[in-house]
Image (cartoon, rainbow, N blue to C red; front, side, top):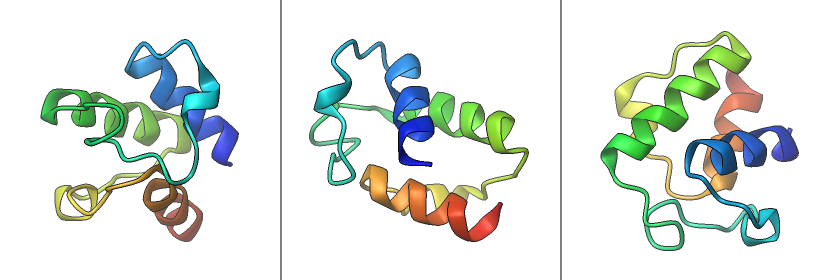
Length: 75
């Protein structure tokens, strides 16, 4: 699960070095993701896992682990 999500984030944010992305990676602090980046990542995740992520839930995503945990609980 982590690897799939990591790959989606890397693709959406144009990150070439996958080693940069760990469960503890902060989307904002480590990857400098802005709100538009976040929307693109969320949309890609929704498409991949055929789920709808509420905006209130997405606002709580601080690290990649937050996303992994959310998707594991909601898919």
